[in-house]
Image (cartoon, rainbow, N blue to C red):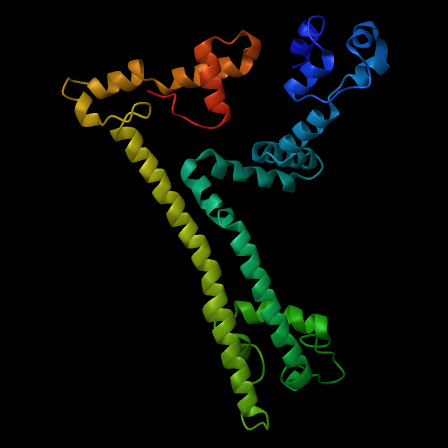
Length: 297
């Protein structure tokens, strides 16, 4: 855009060209831009808004974050060999099947995080009830030894979250039974409801989100694979039509409608100045910017 503005600034109005190209008006004119020099001029000529946007895109890119994580652990491994063990996860990234397993955890990430938050809130509510009414079933102090299971709200909450959620039968399996106690009926209701809401429902939902995401991703990969093997990606014509001639489909996708050729053409448009586009290239570029693929045959 700067090259176009500089090229036509002598013929057309500088401000009009800037507005047409969607560029902000700078504090200097075209003549000052030509006359300026030095470090200050270089700093003033930088499109800072674009640089900030570009930095944000780079930082939030998954490939960049993975490379950064890999690099940090490589540096730390020079001080302690323990950190080199993290590089074994690269095996999971290198195979598509293993990547699908990792993606199944993050595919429904928002729903998973919200469900875990709900689980934490419900466990905290049960912690408040237990700390105020059933604390005697938790704290069994003998010989002046402090029982840390429910010594205060924090330890009580950690105990419920660590022991209660992991226990197959809920928190009731980890504390003293209420046999013959005055609060026996209330303890039974407490244990059963904790088991029902936390173990049966919420943990099952969390597991279901991960399993369903894995099944969905696996079905998508199989669907894409089957479609690529049975239809031409470019024209959409089925394999049966081309296989009337021996190796017709393979010849078609390798020579006539090779996907790599179309990708090369798009990379050619990305690297070529838009002021030098032909009519067809301009049409394809506009369609590509709108993520519309109707220019395929």
